Image 1: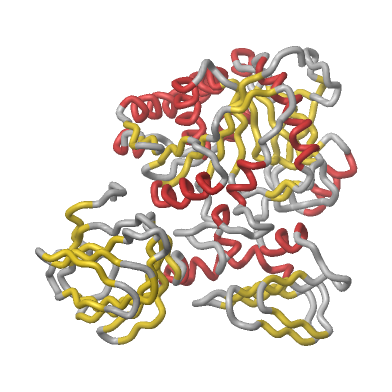
Image 2 (image 1 turned 180 degrees about the horizontal axis):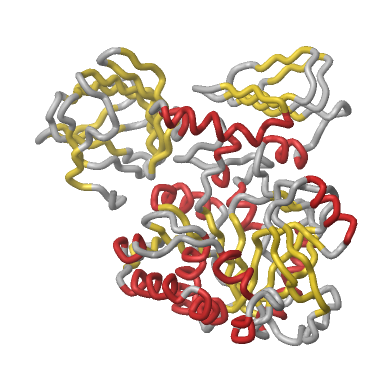
Length: 489
């Protein structure tokens, strides 16, 4: 490359990762978890683009559900990043998400090359990844829509495939090929034939294109989605680091994926309209990629002992093989087992054969059908001011451990059905209770009567830890009337 390309990283963070239950839940999905190393999957996605050769890098842009906004903003802050968080008021799949990102990117810069990445994938060879992305940036800067085909090492039935066609004529890199076609997840025999034939690769879900090229392609392929996203963007507003789009307009937007909306239509010879579309190019990528779609995929990418076992947390194994055992707290002991997955959290334990981990989603579906909270939320719940953990609960009472970050402030609120007793374990609390405001320190407590307006703040420079005992006829989280909230909830 003779000149640098401005690359806008776009991280799509909308998935719920139900096959990694019980660690991944709807309200705290897998991309926010530290499954491999200290970084969450989202943080690792942002970190791996740093240092791409021959490129200028814009601050990252994350497109996510509004519910995850504070956790994602905090994870970016811990990386020292000041990116943009674009909030989707409802899920409409990846094509509308990318369209909103393209509109935001053009506002922020002069038509950058978008590097589109799911937030929940793993890439172990970052150097190889960056080299291929650098080659893709050159192609995308010249008007192509680029995707990356993962070099397959097995007849995998869990991925879609891309067939490579003729060499891309405008490419300096002979590895660049025209996209011949996309194919859905095959059966085993078909997957084996793809592996033997040699022109097929796994569909990575990674893409590069100029923002204007994507918008133009959407205008040809899905003008209805483009129009809805443009209206939602025009009706949106910026709230600090968060960009909000118009809720009603976005809710009217059709749902479609990047593949279905555009990529399958720009495959060479796919349909007559492809003549009006940009070139679709696939580059091979061999960089230790995994979508970590289920527990067996996580076992594949994690370091193993001599007998193929993977352990995290408080785990003891005896005479075990090819087993994945993860503990968040309690001791897991396994004796004489093989090919098992055992995952312990505070409120649920999963035991599965490694070959059946794709069916974990059926357990999540059953929990939701029964109205059980374990299907969607952890016992430990993160909030913009900190977190709380439901320690115990019974008829007419509930006990929570609450931690408030330095400077954190809960909303000024009131409850119709419960009273609360607060005991400070460590740190300092500023309490508003009715017309009174006062400080509490370690081992001090106060009582918040039912129906009384109240607020909890941490004015100190260390975390505030306290125990809350709730009592009343109804203890649900929806019994909150907010009067003021610094986080805009």
